[in-house]
Length: 116
Length: 116
Image (cartoon, rainbow over the protein chains, first blue to last red):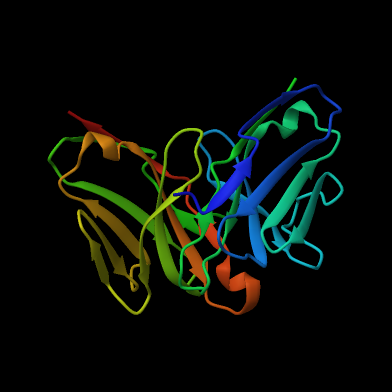
């Protein structure tokens, strides 16, 4: 069964709306979670690393004020796309690492965000 | 600059034959490599991995080969089945400590189609 739950799976909203995406680790604690973005026919691009109890680490070129990340507990990280515009439309995926660095990351099913 | 490259965007194979997916990397600090399988509108699912201290890892129909000197790895699927049709991502992890040791760099993926 899924070890990482991501919600919602699909969002369609108007330009200017803020959208929150949740990522939950099931049956295990994740002090670190990762947020990725995937454009059509492109690779998964790491946006930021979410750290429980501290600020997220953003990759170069990712706007911190646009993509707000909160890691409120050991099982929940949220990504809020603020004042979303059509260019923010994409597939967003979260993941949580295994207990050891030699274990694979477990991914959520992703969220398709469509901004009209 | 793409550190992980999958130069074949697509591959078609007859059912029962071998599928070979290739991946090249440029970062010599990568020490752990993974293959993920992804269906449309779903998150990637872990398939198989290999540490840089090995040159081969086998799991059922899936075998990953690593050639460190050539900075090349490949995934072999034999026999290929129609259910294997998906996008396959090669990913690599850079040796390090802390949360950074969990970060993965992905290739752009190869879409495998297994024809019945």
